[in-house]
Length: 237
Image (tube, rainbow, N blue to C red):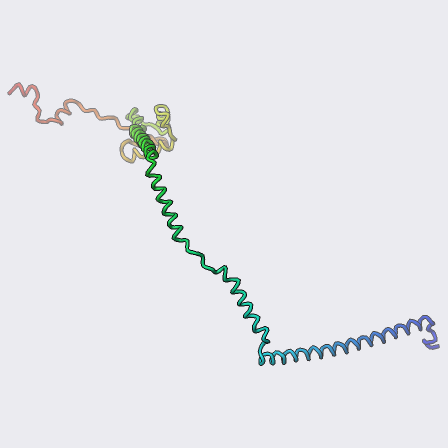
């Protein structure tokens, strides 16, 4: 028995349907391919015609309407721009005259108001007087260096550390109290100037003010007036 004899009627019907669909598909592909070929040929022809038309237009020139259109546009643009480009009337001189008049008015008003000058003069005098008073007060007050030196001289010949001098300063002059470091800087400055002596004992800096030198009357007399005669010598003559 062959394979064809085995096919049932429904199988034959499906086989015929598939064959017919395949044939229709093939015919549609051929039709579309023919249309594509025709369209490609038409497109190629149109491009060739465009090149030819461009060359011919270049020889003949643009149409008369296109030539006149730019000119009309340019004329309209100039007509629209003309009002905005109009030169305004000169106003510089008027503004200058107005400014000069205002300046003269201010000067005249200042000249007619002596009260302001009269009021400012006492203020300046009072400020000057206050500044002079402040300078005199500052000049009358001793400096910190003088205060520290005075505290050391009060203990002349006695070595003192920075903390002790600082405590004396706070006690004697509470309004002039300052830091220990400032007092130390002042003491070092006095020591560098040889006004006081500085030495270290057991790792601490000690500052000593020298004792005042006592001058005997005999020495002073002999030094000041060596030609002065004693009473005994005067009696001999």
